[in-house]
Amino acid sequence: MRDVAERAGVSRMTVSRALNDPESVKEGLRKRVLSAVYELGYVHNHLARSLSSRSSKVIGLVLPSLENSIFAQTVKGVSDLLRPLGYHLMVTECGNEPKDEERVIAAFIAQRVGGLILHGTHHSPVAVRMLQGSGTPVVENGDIPADPIDMVASYSNREAARAMTLHLARLGYQQIAFAALAANPRGATRSLGYDDALAELGRPADPRLKIEVSRGFAGGAEAIAHIAAIMPEADALFCAGDVMAVGALFECDRRGWKVPGRLAIASFDDLELMRHVSPAITSLHLPRYEMGKRSAEMLLSRIEGRELPVPVLDLGFEIVQRAST
Image (cartoon, rainbow, N blue to C red):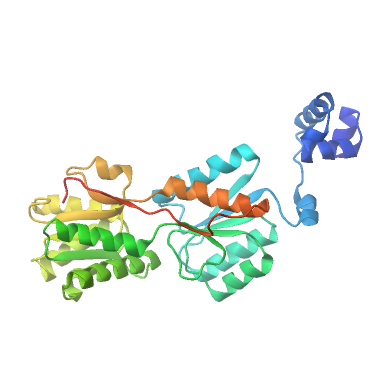
C-alpha cells in the first residue's frame, strides 16, 4: 500500500479509502490510485479489514460435489446476484461426509466469510455448533429441514417424490418401482415421499420395488436388471436422479423394452438432457437458479441488517409430463 501511495502521489489513507470506500474519494484521485494499483500488480489484502469488521465480502458455497451438473444453475443464481454488488463467491465441495463438511465450514469461518450457503441439510452437531457460535449468516438449500440452522431457500424432496409417485398412479401405473443411490441423504428423503404416496393410495409397500443402485448411467442399468430379475411385473420406474433415468432408458433400449410400452420412466431434477433423449423423460423440475438467487438475497438481507419476510422459503417444484410416461 505504501508503494501504491508513493506512485500515485497520495497518502496511504487515501489509498485505503479509494480501495475500501471508493465513493468517498474524488474521481481524479481514485483513478490515480487504481492506475498505480494496476501498474504495480497490487492485490489488496482484505484480511485486516475483515478482522476489524468481523466479516468480509466473500460468500462461501458448500456443494456435495463439483462433478454433478445439477448444481450449476444454483451456483449461477448466487453469482448473478452477488457479483454486481461487489461480493465474491467461493465454492467448495464436501461429498456427503460430515467430517469433510466440518473442515470446510471451519475454514470458511476462520476466513470470516460474510455468509455461507450449504447445499445440504444433514449436518453433524459439531458443524451446527460452529455455525451458530460464529454468528455467520447461513442459508440451507437442497431440502426443507425440520430444524433449520438459520435460513432456508429450497424445495421439499419428500413432497416432490410423493407428488411424482401419485402422478404416475393417476396415469394408471400399478407397480411403480423406485430407484435411488445407496446411503444418500436426499435419496433417502425422496424414498420417504414415495412411501407416503403408496400409503395414500392404499397400496402395500413391496420391498422388491425399492432399488438401491450406484451412481451414474450404470445405476439406471442396475435398476432395469433388478426389475427384470426380481420384479418383472413393474410397469413404471421412478428414478431419484436424471442421469440414472437416462441410464435406465439406454438399458431398456438395449434389451428391446419399449418405453413407455413395457416400462414407463420418470425422473427427478429435469436437466436439459431429459428433453432431448427419445422418448423425452417425464421429470420433476426444480427451481435451482431461483434457489441460488433467493439464497443470496436472504444472506444479504441478514448481512445488511434488514428484516426477512420469511426465514424458510419453499420454492416448490413442477411435474413436467413427457413421452416416457
